Length: 188
Image 1 (cartoon, rainbow, N blue to C red):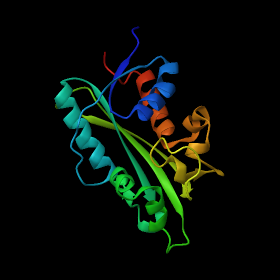
Image 2: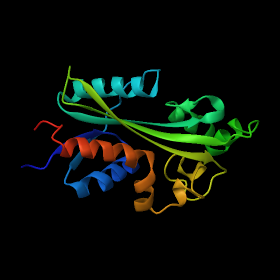
Image 3: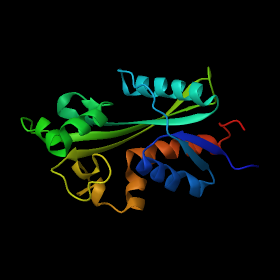
């Protein structure tokens, strides 16, 4: 049987590295292509579905996309799927300041992967969640909001990459995707 190949649509080298580190040991090849895809407003799932449909049309074939969210419990799930824009606008300090008036600093990191066999095909979703809390930044600031999301006493930025991949939202979602592929879900 040939090795399954996923075409991951991302321009984010850190995301690509994590996806490869989790899927390639399971015998799943990961290629990537950077596309500027529209990001609609809506639920975590709606954003991922629309991104996946647009990518499948642009590539004219099977694709994998991801949308990552950081959901503050005190703010009813915001910034959610808009975390990228919040990070660019207000940074780590601003994100912490959003919770300054609240005792509840709990948050959920959510990764939703969308897979489609191609244009007009069904979009399948694979989602993972990790519960943690928002803290002042600690660790390297090289990967998004990792320095402010703490799980079990360490921020994502402080964790060893392999250890992070075992407990992270992305790792949990990719384990579901891997199991689906190994179960014969992906057509050649």
